[in-house]
Length: 303
Image (tube, rainbow, N blue to C red; front, side, top):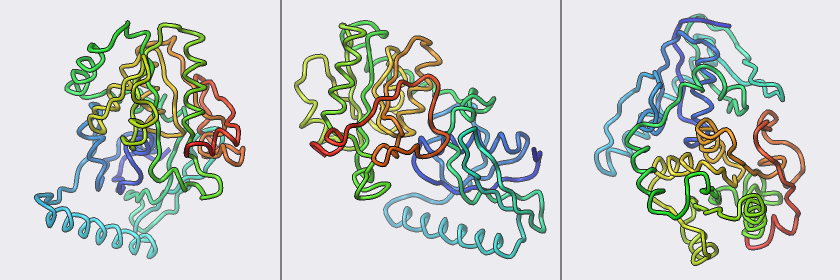
């Protein structure tokens, strides 16, 4: 294991991806200074995160465009220095048994550019830095207030996360990761067999879709407050949850489980690779999640 030095990273993916990437960098070098471009939701939403931030102006649309331009230029410069072997480069060697780091040494051996890798596996979340991730108190307050307005006990509340957006064509248009309404309803019925008092909280990146398909169902409530607010509400559902093949849902489930060891979670078998029946990514299979096959009819209906 490398220790000390400086780690430079750029935002890759959404919040769930970044919650894996941060503890993975700490696993690689616990004492390193991490300089991150982006990853603002991780900083805003979680305590126990030690990262330096490159600050760019974000005032107005022109400010956001300028920020993206400067971030792009910095990313381009890092790629050039990596190609010239001026800095050490870290990539992920994907494996079923946890993250493996592939290091290409550079002239400045203690400057590490995390070029690629998702590091999506249970052992990363169970590392000291993964276990140290705690939601910011203000999001706990939002979650408690939102959940308190629903009927039943906290142990009767289950989240349902519906990921759509890019999942309608990813990882391929032929075998997308998106799940159908029918699949979600089947898993909700499975939950109700275990707990007839189950109350479901539905969150999604596609509000019109869930309002059309889940709106008006008894015992089902749609929440659409914001990225971190929705995440906190999901993490506050101590009964468990029905997960899409999303790291956002995975981490919300992980935090809920830390509060309630008996929480029950269901996810599609093979995760993002359910369309081809091969695990994707390789290390994502998790010991405390029950995996359910996705019939091809359920994968395609109501997409």
